[in-house]
Image (cartoon, rainbow, N blue to C red; front, side, top):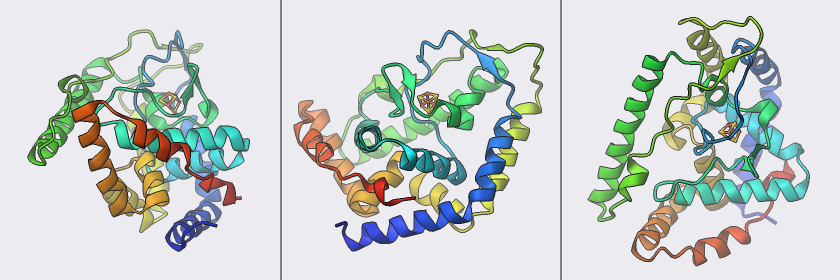
Amino acid sequence: MFPDKVKILLRIIQDLLDKSKKQRAELREAYTLVPSSHCRRRALCCTMLPEMSLIEALAAIQCLSEMDPITRLRLTRGLVRYFFLNSVRITSCPFLIDRNCLIYENRFFGCRAYGLWPKHYYNELAARSHQMKRYNQEQWQNLGISLPQEVADFQVSYCPHVKLDGDASVDDETLPHAADKIELLSRQLAPWHESFRHSYFLDLSFLLASLVFGLTEAVQMKFAFVKDYVKTGNQTGLSELVGNLPDVFAALI
Ligand code: SF4
């Protein structure tokens, strides 16, 4: 039912899921190194899909494959839409529905660590990300497309409302230690770990769009959609395309 190139990539993902059971179990342990916390859960921080390593992307795909088909298809389509529009619109993380994270128990390291970094360190990370966005904006500009300034400048600001549970504490080593552990687990999936970083820029939504359309085609389509959106604000073509996407992860077990 799927074209051959989709089947091939799905087979690779299935193979990676089979081979990464141990690493995914250890990923759950690594998450416990991040002290549990609570916040007002207003989900204002969930405006972007966080960057993630391959092992975390696989854990999210496993979650998707175990969901009921309606939710899975909704999230799959949301991820693809997010990939095509995230350069021109500030939306929300595709896993956020009605202000609820649908993968909350399995959310990524970036989500767990948010609000726990020392403020100065978080601001350094945010400044680096801002630089990258500016660079990205220049690349689009070189292609003749002016991205909206508010999107290029958008940053999730430091949150002072995240509080540690009980007597948990976090020092300068806690989060880097957890991040290193996750990175090491993901590296065990070489060479796909590096491919995910270099070909998909640690972006699950890009992987998914490439799975459905092919990598080069997904990039070309993004260019066309972004160009059209900047010029006309029109999303009709994208909505039709996304609305017809098949349930690709239904084939995974
Ligand atoms: S995965 Fe969940 S917690 Fe993380 S940004 Fe998305 S909605 Fe928020």
